[in-house]
Image (cartoon, one colour):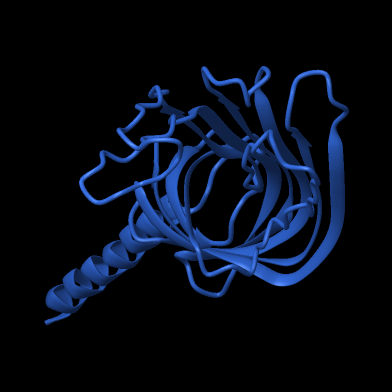
Length: 248
């Protein structure tokens, strides 16, 4: 009987020690690296190249709109450079090209269109658009009373840029028409990481406070001065994000 009790006690003690060891392995450690896919809401700056033949131009600087319901998606790399501190980098890049198509005249006479006439096809403007964004930050991990759950807080700095150039083989376009926008953001971060296993984790986070500055520039034709507009913004409890990541 005593032998049986001792055996059971040893098994239970071993199980507890093994469980503790397994739980300890889940804790973020110096040297850990991870990648995650981030799902959030909000938007970066947008822009359009203006038509070059208008008599008046008005612009308003775009907002980064961290409260927008538009889905945002990016990748993040994280490195534990100290026992409780991690550096992170995330961002993305996009390039779009719309080829030019020449105008095709129809069969109308003196601008008069009658039934049976072939319509005029206007030219299609060639457009190149690029967008990219990068965010760098640092965060500190804090243990909670749950072995697999960790609270973290820190800050980040972000930069986003977008540019569109439009041109066509047409007397209206005297060189390229350009529209560009860029923005800066500084934000605080709080969130939780739940380590499902040694390699897999799920996170949620939000920005308690953030400041952003955005600028919008347009140049309808080469040789003209830039028309610019800028804006300052403060957001609170914005840009919530869900992350699914892998640690290695």
